[in-house]
Length: 319
Image (tube, rainbow, N blue to C red; front, side):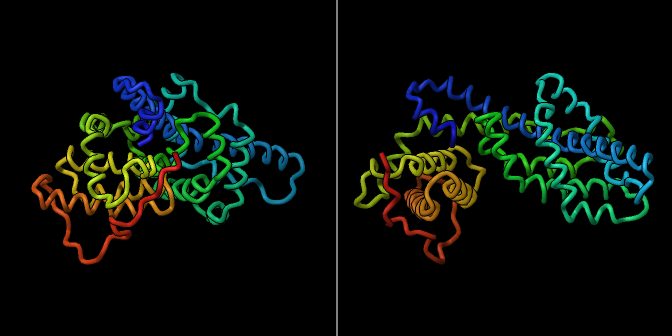
């Protein structure tokens, strides 16, 4: 959606250049995934420094309880720190958190003040590898994911990272779950693409949306009912255009899956009313095309009206 929008806004209409930009933006999202894995390693580095400082102080004054090493001896984070793929990324891309030392310290501080950390440090006995993994899964989900300061920091570092946090966070959590102690430093991280077909999906969808724009917009216009296409908000138009491209191009994707995906996109990128309106429009267009024999897919029988009826007024363009 972002690249389709940029294609029209830039005005050069060079599809090959736009496609290269699409894949560059996808590669930057993968960089962010690796960068977020590095953040956990760097937080542990700060924790180790704090432990050494506390230990030195305790050895001097011998007051209170000796420092607890339970957090920094985590088996999962030790394995992640040695991961070959992550080390190659750091060396090749030169992306580290070294220039964000103060921020990493603040993240560590938020972890120390969390209930997850307090409960962990109150335990006795050695932890298992699975327990160590679960600790970092909880810390990432409850502390790092919720860190609003991180959003601004990442946005300042790369314009490509503005909207990638949500999906990247899910990738990081899946990675923690997939780690296996026996794999050591050779543990596979998530791939940038699941397979060649996955990469091809992005290219085909983007090209289909742009090259079939006239056809898809005519289908939208037929369902507008006393409303000119030019008055539809541009983002809503692009969302529906891309959704129709997916419906026609990928026979294996059920219609209800496509509609639900683009309703979610509309809620994120467009106006508060756009999700319901686009749901109604796409549902109505798909049912008409099925009835006319122009779309060989099916939709569940419509027991209730869509969230917003297709003949409701759309969000009007601000242009």
